[in-house]
Length: 540
Image (cartoon, helix red, strand yellow):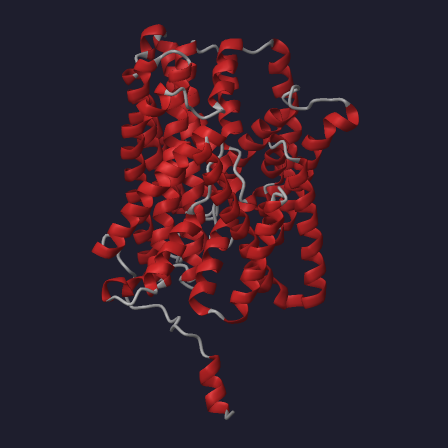
């Protein structure tokens, strides 16, 4: 074989040079596909949350659908050959799934279970607005010093590597397939393979803290006889770490300003964008809290001072919840949205808000965070597919089109939930975690619980300070403590060990190969979990 012939044989099937214009999310073919995928994703998300208590990752389903259509020899499907069009498809279905299940269906189930069905519709309006604001804020904050595009966002890496391998083939495709097989095989044996995959690519310090937290929570009771969950140790640690994390974000905003007469650095421009987003987000959350207080009628049972305190606390809780969930998702691929919402509720109980107001607070807190984290995964995938070119016109346009595709998914989620919630509630189907929120409101909190929360907040804050804003040790350790899965802790430990071994053997070439293989592992685990969960849900 001649050199020229060999070069031709090894060339990729597609030209990976970015096109002059990014595909439009509202172009007819793209819009039809995103609408169909969004309806499917929203229905699957609600059904699986109601029946199994989990929300599946459907991102790769959207990408696979677009890849399949791209191979149909019709002109109308030719546009789906673009990895950027496939990215729009995975963005829309993922947004619809997490939006419908976690941001909408879960929160409106709390007033229903509490015996306040008249609150469901105003809650649906309020949490719908919170979900849209959540996603828009992440769009604005992505690739700023608080949420850098260079950070892992593991599920985003998995989606991007799957799309790239499907498009380009070659050695990377075989490496990805190996990861897919590993992830799916481990999932068959009930191993949390996503934890293993995330440990291969997440920040080393953050993953170590996360893994230790998982192991401590999982083995404390059998080894010592102490139930740290009953002592509210994980919750207190997260309170302390979360408050420090919020202060660290504020410090970034205040510190990184451009000097007069000197061109601002990218970090300074990002910090200013972050500051503007935080201010707009604060105004938005405040307006939604006022709307919820009035729309649900809870203002009737509170004095003016209590009402003002309730609105301000709800706004603050939404902000902290969003940031904690986003930070945890960015580093670990896991976000403890349910548990952090419970923390906000526990503090609200300690403050002394009436039960009806606590119902609203629990729903509002639970609604903020999931859409924020999911949009981060999608934008990370798009950022990788666009060549990691921050600040370019193509990157900016692509990010904007992803936002539009995501909003299409969220809009579909609102319609699907609005049309289906009565059917589910009539059959007594709500998110299982809702029972925990209702039980907490009904039981109240003792003085011992308050002391434990305050006590354990101190080491959580100190650990977060020690790790700094870059490593987020406190938030990730507390995230691990909130998740009762010791097996996931051992899988994180195995992932870290494999990562260190591969880096020692391969050196500088390890990172790219680990990212591709880890993306396959996470994707394989997600796909197996989706299909097996869908089968179980249908049987129920």
